[in-house]
Length: 283
Ligand code: GLN
Image (cartoon, rainbow, N blue to C red; front, side, top):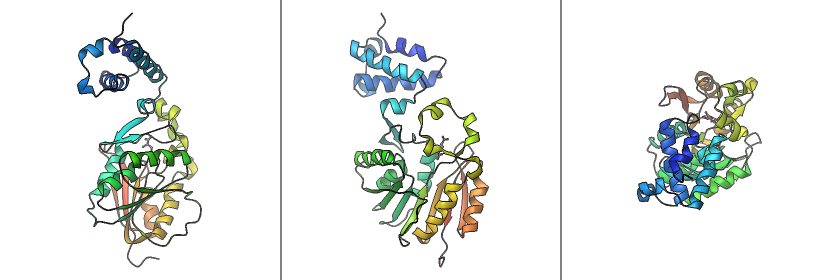
């Protein structure tokens, strides 16, 4: 019987591209050999021990069902930092790294207060807490399971984030406080489901992804209102958006009273993020 990782991964041909298989090989070897890739010799690639082979086969079996490798290994990377993930949270996306990059480019003074609404894995909040000097970061989510994962990620990255279980559609009673509010809310419409990959549809939390076609921007409407109440004057609101909805999101922000509205594309050339400023003297 063959004991090489290549042999085990042969089963994935057709399901994944060659380059994906080579990344998967590296990740699986790191996992089953409990070693950093640099420490893994070609010998290891060729000869796995019994228990290593068993673990690798189990991972491959799950990959064949379409389960994302990040959920299988219960971890990923975001902005060069380690994050744990579970099916309670979306797997952080590269587009969201671009949103974080935009926020960080603001070079704000130390001690900024920041709120992430619908934090999920905490990837935005934890990264901002790590990279914005002296920032005071708050993060809300409606899901207890997500907040548990997000808290683990704050711990893992040695930052302090104040998490709370909040339903954004309930009244907010806080006075204007934040310098920056950011959100990557659910924005995929039900009718877009047909174009989504099975790995996303079958495994990622639908509550974090989908909105009804008839109320596709319900989170943006509500978060814009909440942000007007919670931002200090000249505070900024950042959104990740559905690429089809750039102009509509800008119109919502304008109609609520925001100024300096800017729509940006992601690296793939799709409208993907918006920034707006609460004008001085508003409310
Ligand atoms: N960008 C994610 C996707 O394409 C969706 C994220 C979201 O709904 N906020 O699956």
